[in-house]
Length: 302
Image (cartoon, rainbow, N blue to C red):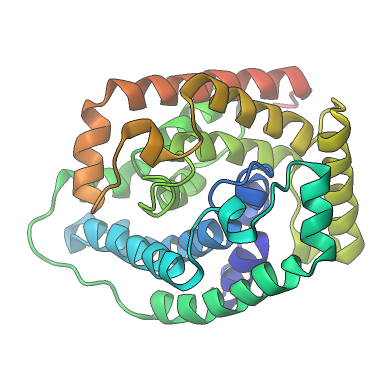
């Protein structure tokens, strides 16, 4: 996740790296739960970052085109590598110690992740450089994206920010990358992914700032906590049980399983989410549970 997104943030010349830090818990398919691959999530964030100015001007009517660009990337990734899900792409369960060791010592970390990051970044450079098509009638979708972000993650982020003080409008706008199961791929539920981002703001790191040692040590600490089931105020100790609780409650981590469909575009997604009692319930639960976990594991300085 961070390798892909951070590379494109540098390429785009962005100076605000809070989204890189916030994205930390999306690694490993969401705190190592094996859902949407971080290369997919990071690429979608980069696409939104590159075209954010387009959707902040609703009169350009480019909102649906941006969702289309996200879907173009996620469909390309699925064709190229067989799946957008971490557990299917790697062929291991990285939340289990045996799976993690298999991932590291059989070369999958290189043949799957490093290799796929390189191919994805090459594709993403073309996608972020190509202008979005637009024009025509301005829709409610265009106005919504300009004002407050997308339809799945943004509502949760806004609620957690109101409850805890952690977050920003900037992050909420970028989070449309997570809508429809990340880039309309039907993967990791956007509301659930959105709830992870404030945890990343609190306990995540920026690899560019921390360097190799400062990146590897928290990574190993987090996975040790995961495999030993040790609880402390640390990203994987908080985020992974939250992910498992969500799965036990809703039966899956993936949007396509929960709502029984994938979405063709932004307008179709918006129409469905606005009318869906299931999506409304999930967003409320993610907000309340994430805010509670943050309150239980932090001392507020705000």
